Structures are given as C-alpha cells and as structure tokens.
Length: 312
Length: 259
Image (cartoon, rainbow over all chains, first blue to last red; front, side, top):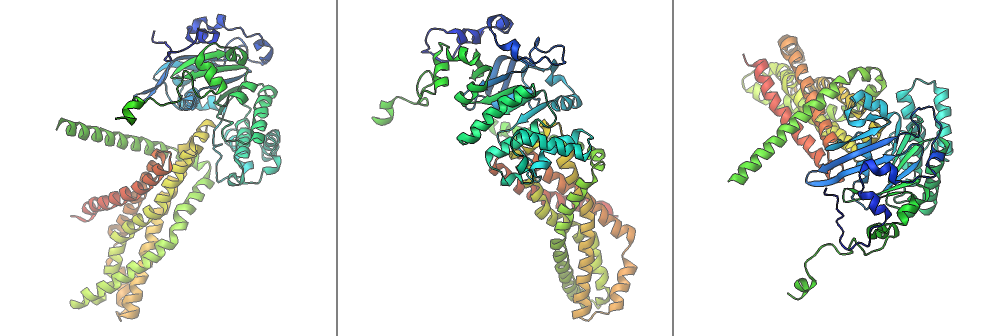
C-alpha cells in the first residue's frame, strides 16, 4: 500500500512504528489511553470524549510536484494537548492551515467537531473559525492597533458587547497572559515572546473550543519559553480547551503534550503518549526525539562519492 | 520550437488565470460595500490615506503643469494672434486629459505603491491569515475600504489638479505674459462645456481610480510573502497602472471625443 518507511537501516520494529503503519480503523483499539478520560471535560456537548474533536482521514496534499501529506490519519482528542512534531519542512504549518480551512486537501477529509471543514460554505467556515483560535509563529498582530485593541478586535468584530464589558474581557485575557500592564503598547514595542502572548490573549478572546499553535517555542529565550510552555498547559486545562501544538522543540513540547504525533515525509511516523513515543524502537523516532546528528536521517545531503569529487 | 510554443501557451494560460483571479478579487472587493457602510470610519481613514496625503504632490504638480501649459500655449497661440484663447487651451487640456491622466499616474506612484507594499507586508507578516482565522474576511476589512477610498479620492484629486493648473496657467499667461485677464476667464467660461469636458473628465478619473487601486490591491494581495516578492509587486503596480491608464485614456478619448 505504499506505506513503507523510506529509511533502510532501521532497527526492529517497535511499538510506535507498528502503530504508525496500522490502518486508521484499528487505531482506537491499538492505543491505550489510560489518562485520557480523566482529562476530557464534562462539557455540555453530548459528544464530548466520545468522538475526537478533529478527525483527519486519508489526507493527501501536494504543492506542485512535492507531496507534503500522503495518506495521513489523525485523531485529536477533546480536552487534551496534542503535539504534532516533525523535522522542518514536513508541512506542520500546512497541516494547521488545512485544519482551519485556509488550504484545500487534494484528497481525504478533515472534520472539526463533526463538520467537514472543506465542504462548508464560506459563511459556515467563518462561523466555525470563531470557535477556533490560532497562534501564528510571528504573532500576526495588527501592527496599526495597540495591544488592547488587538485583543479587543475579535470581540468588536463578532459581538455587540458594550464597551465596558469589552474592556473587562480584554483586561482579563491580558491578565491571563501576564500583560495587563502592556495594554497601551504598540506591537512594534513588544519583544517576540510578548507579541506571542498578546496573540495568545487574542486567540482566546472569544473563548474558542480549540487553539492551534504554530511553532510557539521557536526563537524564544529560556524564560519566555518557560512562560509559554506553562501558559499553553494552563489555558488548556483552565478553559477546557483542546490544543494542537505544532513544533520541533522536542523537550518542551513533550513536557506538556498528552499525545504526540511525529510526521515526516508525508506520513505519521509515530503516535501515542510521550512515553510511548519515547520508548519507540524505531531508529528514526529515537534520532528525532534525542536530536542525534546522524542516524536513519543522514548528516550528509546525498552527494556523489567522495573519491569522485576530490580525486577526480 | 515545440518548447517555445509550450512556454508561450504556458505563460498565456498563466496570464489568463491572473486576469481571472483579478476580476474575482475585484468582485469580492466591490461586494464588500455593505459591510464597509457599517464601518464608515474605515473608509474615512483610507480617503485620508489615499486622498488627503496625496494632495501636496497633486497640488504642486498641477501648478507646474498649468504654468508650463500657459507658457507653451502662449508661444504657440500668439503666433496666430490667438493668445486671448489661452484660458480655453489650458483648461481644456487639463480637464479633458492632463487632470485625470497625470493625477492617476501620480496616485499610482504615491498611493498605489504604498497600498501594494502595505497589503503585501500584511500578507508576509501573516496579518491577513490572522484576520481569516479570527473569522474576519481580509478582503472586506482591508481591501474594500482602500478600494473605495481610492475611488472617492481620485476624481477629487483630478479636479484639484485641474483647478490648480488653471490658476498656474493664469499666473503665467495673465500675470507674466500680459494676456488680458477678462479674455482668459471669459473665453474659458464660454468654451468649456460642462457635459463635454468636465463630465467626461470626471468619468475618466473615476475609471482610472478603479484601475489604479484595483491593480495596487491585487498586486499586494497576490504578492509572494517575502521582501523580494513585495518589492516586485510594488514595481509591477506602478508599471501596470501607468500602462493601463495611458492605454485606457486613448480608448476613452476616442470614444468620448471622436465623432
């Protein structure tokens, strides 16, 4: 079925490896999720806990000749932090854009809360998006508005709340990310970490059901990185959110994620709890999780033989 | 040979697709009017951006163009003893042609390139995606106000250009070269037809306004989200707008005045 691993010198198949190559229909049985039910909020939704919030089946997406996803199946459970990790350029951000309907897949379906994202009308898609927040790598704050106005923006656009209520809500959200005092600053006056926290406050302004984080840890100093790691976990648990974190910062991500997906070369290479993935016997997974310079993924870009280049 | 044909066909299809996308975008921008009317402040901000901030360059250019017209017109007309008609010549050239055309070219250079860079950078810094993710349509919220802002500003700027130009012509003709003041204004009033000259000029400037702002916004919206992409898009805005304005001016002049 064309689901073979591209790496040749891999050790005996481990658990995660086996899971990765299994069909979607078997996945429910194969994954033991002992802690999962405890974290699922007893929300008002009848389906809570029973069905995953995001269901991806047979996803295929190509940019020109380059196939980015080839038959990816994923389930993002409600109420948990799910991390999607993989090397740079594997299309992690593309995955987020597919989930929120900014890109269309070539084949396969993506369902969010039971709705097929790519069959929705423009209006329905926008309504769904008011229930999703996304944290962009750059923050994507509107540069001509102050911090306060940036956080207030979705409230002003989508609600008819009185000004006093908007003020309270915005200050509450800013307090949650520790930036209540920075309300009058302009985005250009913020550090990268602060901009990301403001963007986070904006993303939760409408109390969404799900937040997508695009590389939240990239380029952060240790302190703001620690702040972001804690914030993501706290926001998820306090507001009963579902979080998807796309990242390649293994340690930080694994420390807050309930479940991990490792993707590379358009396929899911491993899935499970951080411990399960960590214990995986797959050479590629081990190399990625421990950041080893050489392994199944070679240090050298494919090149002609050394002798040919140097000795004629 | 076959390769050449293939490339020709490929680029032909590419430009057709571009034209199609441009028109779809224009339709979406134009249809955003109701949501714009609900937020008039956005429109006012853009009229300020495109219109008010262009006033200085338009005013100064209009003055100089009018003065040059006064000078050149006087030299030519006085050879036939018709220097009294200087007012008509200056005003007709400005209202019919130079007002709308030069204004459009200047707006393309000053405001059009700024619009492209602004929208392109908003795209490059993911602000447009960010708006989409907040369930706010960036076309309606970002492009539509800029489009209508330009549309409203262009005829007003063109009118200002012509008015200042007529004064510049008067300054040179009457003030410096001694043309009779009564003849300058009197002939101008008698010979410039409101329907024929002024209305046609206004129509021209509205069409140029649509074209210039449309090109600027399309280039910005479609720009590759890199610094190189934005700089290329800005250049394309100025080049395409200038060519489109001059080409359309010929067509419209032929239709309006060619009987």
